[in-house]
Image (cartoon, rainbow, N blue to C red; front, top):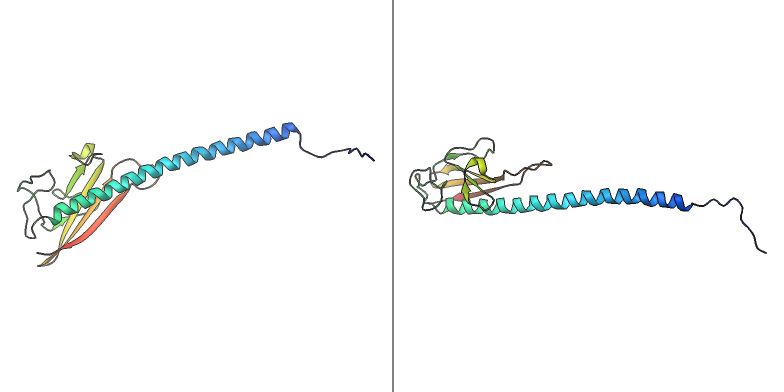
Length: 162
């Protein structure tokens, strides 16, 4: 009793090959998206980590100054000259309007540089809360190009007493 099937409704080899090609094209597109996201995430993470380290460095410089210091210039490399603002109240952390005397610029290695060639911008703001308490805020923003979102930044805040 051998039965022969007539009118078999299966897929032909050509149809299977077309389906595989379509699937392959879709998988390749997904692989490119994954590769892009890994690279973008790595770059963002690296710059975010560096901005945090540079913010901590600036916070150390500022908290190391005397409470009444109003002349130390911490926008340049040590030894710091006495032609700056020290811990005088002022500055801001608005990235679009850095205040003179309360901003410095870093290259990719973290060395101070000019604004035109900076990879990171460090800004700080000093506020007097009372006669014996000051608030120090430091913002570090990456100047590197991020076409898909905002560039990484870090803000640190601390209080200083005499």
